[in-house]
Image (cartoon, rainbow, N blue to C red; front, top):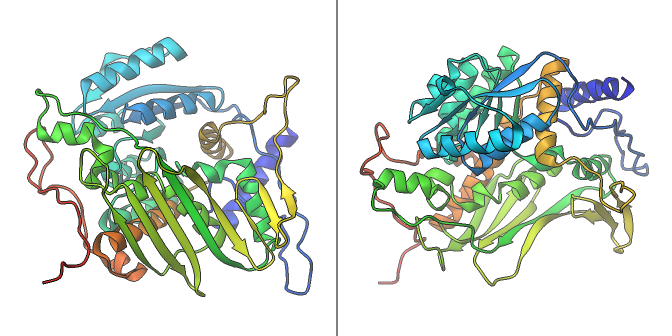
Length: 444
């Protein structure tokens, strides 16, 4: 009971200081004035399971790997939780989801609550589910989020929440509607739900590394995945099954994947960049029209810089993470804070069991624990706008690299750029040309 009470106060405090996530720094953290040493930090405990309460039924829109995983995360979050409906464009995705969740969770879905097609999400929203899990390719997220809020459903939606400025603004508008309707929205920016990140963030906000001056964020890994076109697939079906390689569907990997690290920098700085200049190219990618590497210089107000680097190419240096630097130290944001002389100021250590195994709740489960706890405790959480702004940061970087030009936040906020084919989507030919961006111009 004591833990639950602390958690409720914690959620209330984080809501009061802004949309930093379902959990974050509490108001118990004391401000650090220039003439005082950094304050001690007190952080209420996080729940490792959601409190019991009213039964909550969830519907899953998008039955691929992440949608299936998110459904399991929701069921892991606590008692009286169920998956009651699913929707996907493809029948085989629905069938695979049903088989897996029955075998591994003992959940059997009724045929009447399994929907297929471009309008499947609309039919799912007509059912009596309380929570909607949005896990389709990101292109579809703004429309499906808007519809979910209009249907008065709580929402968990995976990142990224948009692929272009028009979609980003739509998500921001729907986020305001969610707030007004008393709905809860948690997004897939899972580092904001990790106790190690939260402990470090709380100390940084309390002044433990001084004034923030720079950050470096990375997601450099091997090639991700692609699909080979099958004879029976139409052009549209092929693109959607190969979605991570197409900019109109994924936003490119600086957004689809690297958003995690970019969001961490924005979270720690407590603001968003004013402009960006970047480079990128396509060296090895097999399908689609995305780049496979980016390097972008983002500038925050006050001339603090974030250098962003991401790559998806085999046999190259691997690095995923971030560093935030202040006038009095620096941190990897995840578990260690160093002083300027590189001595360790703070290190987060997880408890271990009798076998030496780390005891922790996965961040992906924690996202759903936080969502369910907020719904049941009556503490509203709405992360959509904050995540949409981090998505717009990545979109700004992408467009800077694609064009070779300096791109500003204000330009992105007013841009009419909307990706994807015109008109109604159908499983047939795609009425658009996929062109790999080439910045600048060639010499005459």
